[in-house]
Image 1 (cartoon, rainbow, N blue to C red):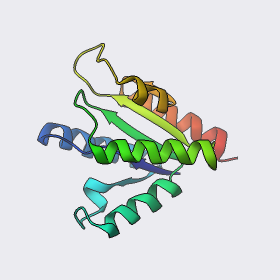
Image 2: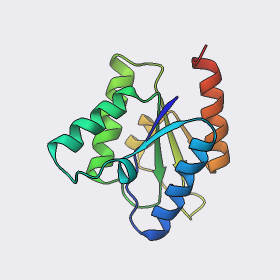
Image 3: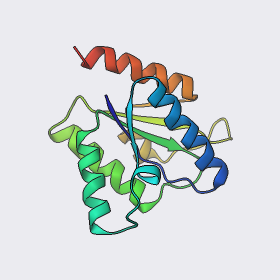
Length: 138
């Protein structure tokens, strides 16, 4: 099952964590696209088209909520994903992984409304994705 990780790390710690998260998802039989790893073209039209294609093909979109504001690219991806889900792909799952160090990080209302579920740990994320996979791979 295809997963699109729609998060740009803001520092080395986040990048290392997300790299390990991708490895864990792939170890659980998910095919993960993460632009930070897969897309080496910089910010150009080809990258934007590749990302749109990957978003369209992915069954699960994961946003890691780091405690920083989402970048313009992340907000664009969230909007594009939400639109696809509400127009033509209602089965698409949008998951937020709350990586913020503050227990009760105040997630933007619009972002929270666009995400189907917010989980607190990577283990909850994997469990959520496995449950989704069982439901929609039949």
